[in-house]
Image 1 (cartoon, rainbow, N blue to C red):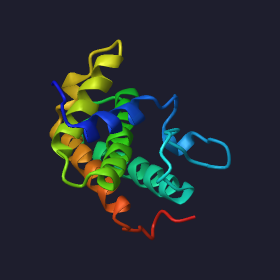
Image 2: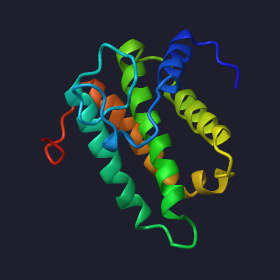
Image 3: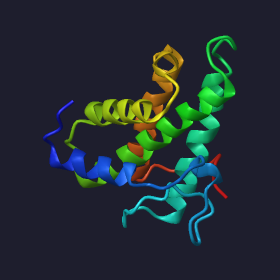
Length: 155
C-alpha cells in the first residue's frame, strides 16, 4: 500500500522504530515496568502498563477458542506482537489525527510485521478469531487514547 496520509506515515515510523524484542508486558524501559519502547511524549507509564496488560490478557482469551492444530504458542506470540503494535499505533493516531484511516493503519501494521518474520504466518493472521483480536486491539488503543480506563488490569 502506498501511504500518502502524513499522520499514518508518522505513526508507522514511531511504531516500527521500537526496539522491543519481547511482548510489552515483559519489557521494561527506564522507570516503566511494561513498555512498548516507542518515542511518543503523549504516552504515560500508566497508559503503557494498561495497554500491555489488556492486550496480553485478551490475546489468550481469543487463542484458547482456536483449535490447537491451527495455532501454536509461538505463532500466538507473534500475533501478540502485531496486536500490541496495532494498539499502540491506534493510541498514537487517535491522539494525532482521529480522522485518519485506522483501517489502513491496521492493514499496514499487520503486513509489515508479517513481512519481517522468516516463517510465513499469513495463515495464522487470517484466522477469524485473530482478525477479531486485531480489531479489539485497534479499539483498545483508541479507547485508551480517549481516556477509557480498565479496572481489571490496574496495578
